[in-house]
Length: 157
Image (cartoon, rainbow, N blue to C red; front, side, top):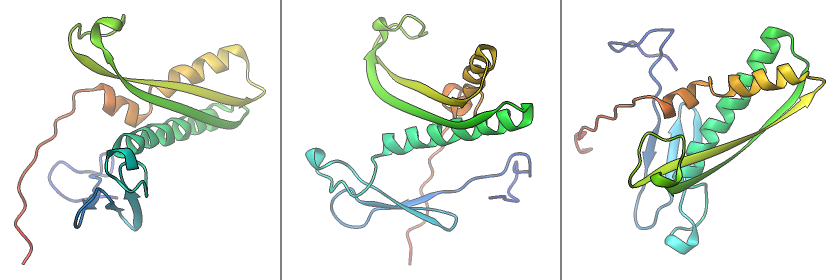
C-alpha cells in the first residue's frame, strides 16, 4: 500500500495496519488493507484462542517473507526450486547462553528458522538459498535498529 506522506515513496511505501480490542478478553480484530485477521491469546493466559497470538503473527510475517524472498531469488537466478517451506520457533533465552549474541546479560529473543527446499538443487544452490533467507525484508527489519514512536490519537466522537 503506497502513501504520499513525507518520507514515503514508491520504493519505500508506508504500510498501515490497525487493531482494535473491544470489551474484555484479548480477541483483537486486525485490518490490513482489505484483509481482516483475528489475534488472541491462548486459553491458559485468559484468551479465547480464536487466533494466533502476537508472537505467532510475528513469526508468520518472517515465514511468509522468507519463502517469498527465496521464490523470487530462485526465479530470478533460474534455480529449479519446486517448493519452499520454513518452520520457525521463538523463545526467550538467557543472554549468557548465547555464543553469537552481543548482549551478555538478561534475556534475549531467539528465533530459529528451518528451511525445506524442494527441487533438483546443487549443494552450492542450497547453501546460497540459506544465505538469501537472511536477506528478506522482515528479517532485516527484525535484526536492524527499529524505532517505534507512540503518540496518543484523539478519542473518537
